[in-house]
Image 1 (cartoon, rainbow, N blue to C red):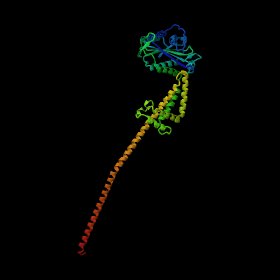
Image 2: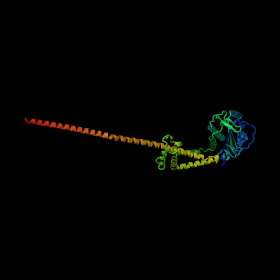
Image 3: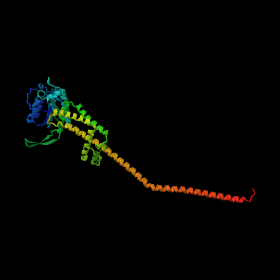
Image 4: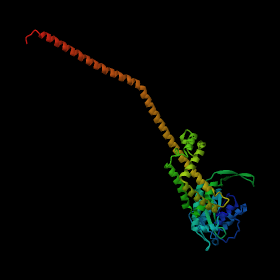
Length: 415
């Protein structure tokens, strides 16, 4: 299966004839010859399609008018200004980056961008795609404030295609020493090679702009977020659930003592990660089986779409694996969050238990003294009672004695 979108990119130095050729083509008004190009070839000469095809630029027959980030069409003065910017870039030794983006016409028709009956293209949508794609490219390379570009759209061949040329009038990239094999000398040039990630972003942005899969991908993200959100809401306790509690305990044994490192991506939890992954699998199978089935169906659908866009030789299956890896990571962090909470609860329980035991032990140690004091107090009370009894007895005795003496004394008196 041929890919629906093909991106070919390279750069030329300021000293190359190709740079001069492009500058001359920018404002060329005379008739242009027809050039046959083998777009599928990787031969270096064939890639000069970019410059040989500059006779496509601004050619009414081929529907290929120049446009820029701000202008859909360029008048004479605007072309002159653009040419001056490119000449200044060449004088300042800026590289020129060249991109050719070609499409499968049937795929474009399926996306509602190309209309075979009239052989017309939705040029507004194509220009919007190029502009947003180039913004992404320049941001990725840190050139959004320094670079300018111009492009043209052509659809008089079997593959509709876009040409883009980019320069920095005032270069900002670092300079490097490059060995020239032809001259055998080292030259100092501005770094021109783009990051591989930039080209990946460029290609995916082109395809995604023309084929809006936003709704489908939002549904995938909703499934992922919903699953993780429900876990964070702790609908089930993994520490006590019968199928995960042993794995939960074993994973905690393997975790480092520093809980700040309890993050799924940290190397320090490597030994615990297999247990965490198994917990995640069990949780998803037991509590989100329907969601996971739906997720896999939607991911497989996206894989087929990407296979059509990028071809069988591409890593189209990476999208699904990336999403599943992201789910595993987020679920792993949710499991670790529960482990941190569990560890905190356990330590709080242990602290309260020890505190309670210490209080009990303290009371037991104080008990003999409390008993002694209690006996002492009881003895004092008894002693007081005895003293009172004795005083009462002595008082009664004195009273009775006095009464007898009084009675004896009164026996001699007449009553």
